[in-house]
Length: 316
Image (cartoon, rainbow, N blue to C red; front, side, top):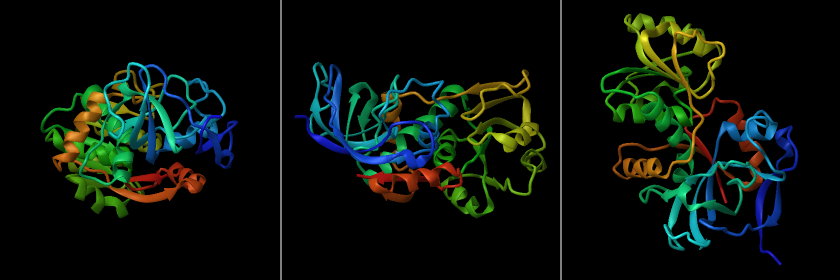
């Protein structure tokens, strides 16, 4: 009989209350895979969207689905030909696979070893668990899609959230000038992370506010929020500037805007680079709240608001 584990599972799309903690079989590691004991998992807005079915036409799913996409843990077993890691190695990773089924809100996870990297050794496991999805998203948006350059002016929308927090730090790592957009209560937090200036989206036209500070405009907009804030911000983009969004695919944008949409992908070499940056003290990820697995619905409800600061995680 297969061994059991606790996992946050849903059997149909709909309300977040559909997610319940159940006992399920621990999956077996196949070829090129490892079995990881999950110690903590990051909570992301996309986790709520998946439960609600917003991505059901974009991503194949197989029910029952275990929620969650990033984590930190310890390798327990290796499948055939999996030799990059030894049992006992402390790892972290972004676990989105071609079919959404086995997520990270569980005591164990089977995952291709190619998705993993050794996790930072100088921070608590809760912080390490929160890095993969937001770290890779910011990395691939700013470095790969955005081609950010030294001394460029970068406007980050939603800069106090998990992705935005990493975005500020990665942009400063490239010696860019960073303007963060968030509510006024988060301005000190953003500046502590390295933002040069902060703009309040509440009661402001963000684009006009930025133009008042920098008449020539910004070189790059990194959009983590979409909606009206994004539309307002476009007037502050230089004619030759670039827009990278994780929320807007471009259907309602002027075709003359140099726009790229990013849906983050697993990348172990980029995770390794992020680990090096963390261990050198150049970047970090504040964790705002830690939940137990039994509190998964509360965690999903909070992250869905998009008004959280830093990262929330679930401790197994």
